[in-house]
Length: 138
Image (cartoon, rainbow, N blue to C red; front, side, top):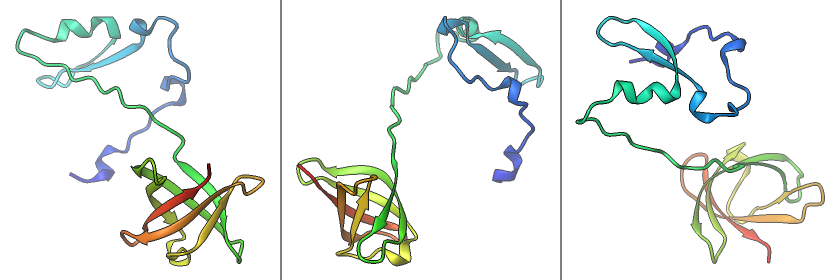
């Protein structure tokens, strides 16, 4: 399967920009695999499509602001850091992706925010764009 197979025209008017006041009245599109027929329902109708043998898995993950823009020490080059996962809370270590990666080396300090008060130090390379960084703050 190729990613290009997922390209389709989605009119802006069909994209929800705010959640429904009554969450169970959110729109629900039902695709019948056997016939290809599409129905438009509301979410509280979802139980009509389950039987006793079905299992529903809920994903309660949360999104956090993971993209930081900053500057590299000395050169002031603009860098982007994408936080992937916290490795060690006490040591403030994070697994990140950096761009442009070729300019970010172990030992570099990175400064974030208008006043450069948030500082991180690159402590390891992990992949071609991956780094481990330590945030330096109290």
